[in-house]
Image (cartoon, rainbow, N blue to C red; front, side, top):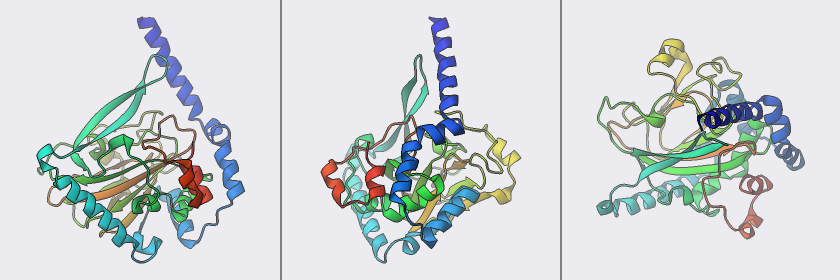
Length: 320
């Protein structure tokens, strides 16, 4: 049995190393996404080009809902977040729902699923990984908007797949609390190249409000892309203090901003969340991967009948 486990582990890592290699990942596994991009031929406007260029250069682009979406759209988003916050507060006697995540780890003949719970995060959506995708919800309209998908596709050079969303409140923790999970420096595991979009629903203008922090130039191929690399399909967590000893301070971007700040980020790059020690933070996250990713979609797809009003990019992003 020990021999079989060892053999399974060797085959697992060799298989994923091969599928994550650039020629296999880009030309073979994502050939359909590249072909679809050429058929749709999305037009990148000035805003989309700026985001795609910043992602290519630094791995991160910071803008705002007001600059990227029509006037008044943020009020819809804020109203939806407030309604969900009241709903959670009304269930205080049942406890605050923490955030449960799933990940992959090597198994005997493939990847096993592991689950872990982040009690410092309060899930305002409520359904966990069985959340249905409601295309009329303002957060979903942001996530699969033509301009959002065009900017991300411009960076990928193919049609992105929308795989994950969350609306989380970062609960207050005592100053000096040890960092854990996403509050530590890490690289996400889901794909060789991926994007998450973060939207602040509250002002994050001080360290105690839980700002997102990123190492510019840390995705693969960047200035710091070689440091603490991914080992797909799992990520990477540098030892405590190792990143600060290696990366100069001017390469570390702390994303302070008012409510409405919108961050596009390749989270295969080195990043970490922020603990809230003085002010609770509410943040929406949308995640995008390629069809080559071995990680599952983390929501319930809508009935295809509801696809009719969506753009071609959106239909592809949420289709099988």
